Image (cartoon, rainbow, N blue to C red; front, top):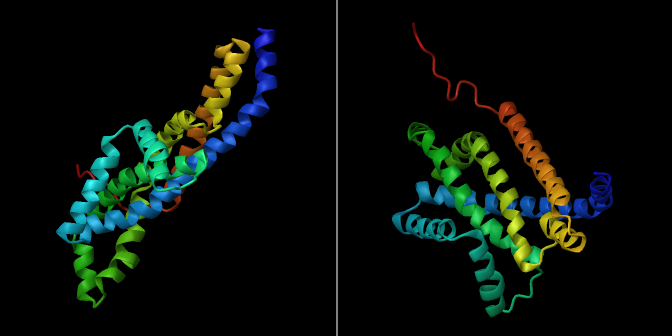
Amino acid sequence: MNENLALIYQSLPYLLKGCTITIGLVGGALGLGFVIGVPMAVGQVYGNKYLSGLISLYVWFFRGLPALVLLFLFYFGLFSLLGFNLSAFTAAILVLGLRSAAYQSQIFRGSIQSLGEGQMLAARSLGMKKSEAILNIILPQALRISIPGWSNEYAILLKDSAITYAIGVMEILTRANFIATRTYKPMPIFLTCAVIFIILTYGGVKILDFLENKVRIPGYGERRVEI
């Protein structure tokens, strides 16, 4: 028992360095997914059939393939063919971000559609352009409604980040595997990783829950039951 505790204590600084890389992966992928996903959602709802079809094809591709397969296809295939000399960390953010964009676009699309057509019609009747109505009326509400789904995407991305070990990213589980193979004591190391992942997941979700409560649309989603 004392040996296991000593191993955990000695390994913790090394694992925490990997933890910062994991956080960087998740933050970068979430941000990239957001930047791509929001315009995709708007295009799918308000664009013409050709634009909507292209976006649907993108979503179908990135949601249909496992994250590990996408990582290999892009890192060892597409990026090499195009001559991009990307680090494993940068490539991982790009692939996870492109994949996350497919999922986030559907979160935002559902939020936009949940608002109904009445608000857009009201904005247009007041003389607002379609783009103005989307930017000033639709999106501010849709983004707030999307926070619960975005919280779920954060938790999924956090777990998906572990697969980046396959291309050599030194995230937390890659480091844990190095320690386990060197010491032949995998259990205390991977239990420590499990605790770190639980803390990261719970902490991130609670922050997003707090944000959701702060920006909640008054009365949205409430149903009053008359007796």
